[in-house]
Length: 299
Image 1 (tube, helix red, strand yellow):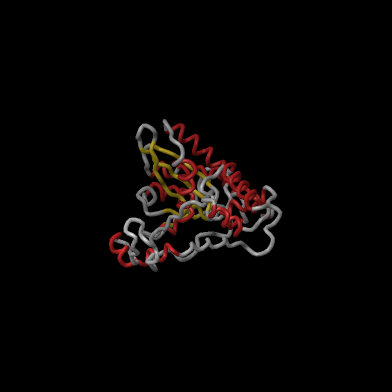
Image 2 (spheres, one colour; image 1 turned 90 degrees about the horizontal axis):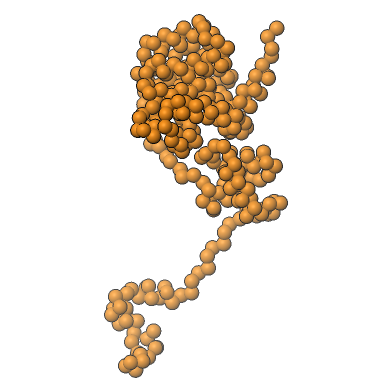
């Protein structure tokens, strides 16, 4: 710059003087004078990419997301659904393409718990050995709040009962348990659910005498989770999250009867189509059928 002659004065001015008048830093001037560095190349896995290019695979991923009856599925479940369609690729590639094209859901991290947090396992070895139950709430289009009670099997992750009520009382909390006992054990009666454990939190509905007496009459044992440790009731909590993301947060209902019908439909679709990673990306119904086929018939 010091070698350039000004057109108006016919003189040359140094960089320091020009920067002082313009209010700029000399480092900024020297940086702009340097040629722009090329953008770093996008890293790719070495070797062949397979029979399907990235652009076509991204379109297949978008189509799987569109066709899936469930919302909020991660790259592992989408990878499994691609395999069901006959498209074989790696999980890492699906994750990379979803990240590059903005197809990943936003991550939400909860607060870290201390040593009091649940650090064992709540997944039993067989179905209908432990059920988890919990309650959430939603609003009708009229502004009325409605309680939604659920019950889920810890082993298969299937929904065994779901119920909506205007008042979230202890009697309404029993409805999903009764639905599950009638469906899985064949009838409602004394000791028909012998060997079943009911995991619940310390809500007033679940620690009430009516709730405790009825599940004891059915033959089930009560298993309350630790206070302020929702991990102990994690199976029911996870199902409620799925219920919210796929139904309660995406649809509105005018009446409780409409909500009740939608909940029953969601229960059937969830049990038939929701994929569980720990079951080899099988749905709860498929895992339950495969498990029952392995049980020898009684003589």
